[in-house]
Length: 318
Image 1: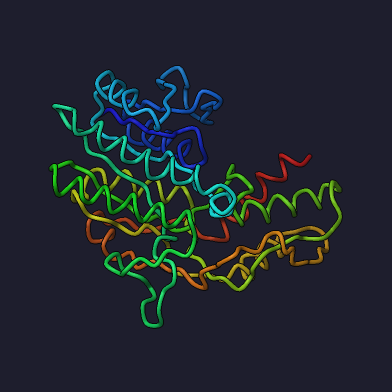
Image 2: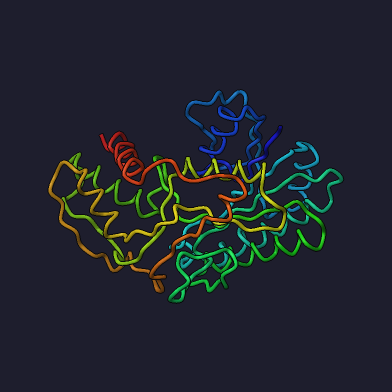
């Protein structure tokens, strides 16, 4: 089988490449932006085809599809930071909505149509009402930020294309996924990086944090990419699947776990710059649907992920 990963130069892409290549023995093609590099530890990069692709150029997408003729397509390319979406909403709409439509239109032109997975976010559910947690896929989305709104739009468009044009497209709503090598734009990586720098003596022993009361559903990225591959095998076209741990934890408790693994005393301070204009209080997944379709459930504990992420940043701070 041949898998094409669109937007594979990022955090999740590297783990997905490794899983598809090393664990499943697939041929893998990865796209990236011209300024990016694709490097995957533990994988012979000579065995991976890497192509430049701008998903805002629909004809370039169609040409690549015709050339590669993949069996599976994983659409990972996105502006995936909530904080960046507040600062640059136009970029977020362009990449997440227009880019998604370009991929769907390019798929329509193919004679032999591949199976496609569009990656969305648990942030799409937004303002969850009392009694709606853990949240099911059929719940009404009430996005609370610009990034989430673009992902809701992408999900709706993919569903329309699947139903109207018979495209073999599935969608996931992936809740917070974390692990070593994640950019510090995201909360666990940010906290671990700060602790590692404090331990190394590279900054004052003060942690800068945002809203600690929000509760989020965290899953190790290695478990998440396993779910993606299993859905390619067993998921149903036009359907949306939650991917998460099924258990929300307060950011405050995440911070405590990280600090418990620190070798130094650290003071915590709220940084107003880290507070979002709107923050959803709780997001927690009901993962019954993906389990029934594939048998998937997370295998890596949150504590293990935090420990390994902190160790990763320690190696970067030496």
